[in-house]
Image (cartoon, rainbow, N blue to C red; front, side, top):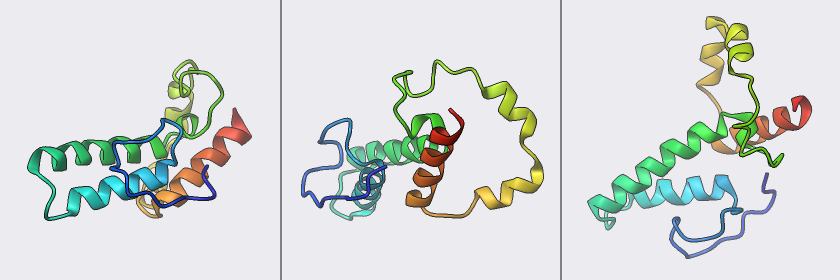
Length: 111
């Protein structure tokens, strides 16, 4: 998690891989919506927004256990068995910061 999100005028695509994911999501979202953004850059920003939102919902991507972002941990089948339709509406709410915090907490608690 990134408790402090320093402001930067650099483009969203710039910066280290360790940059705050919530800040990157905000930057890509703003860049995608800006009228001056070229269509090709707008499409790239949309791709990053979708990728980041997906990552925020994957606890093993929200922490660093030196396991290739959780790609070395076989949990998919176990988790799929526990998902219920009643839980789905709750998953459609929240903010990017909430999603990141929840995923980070689950990764630390479970893995």
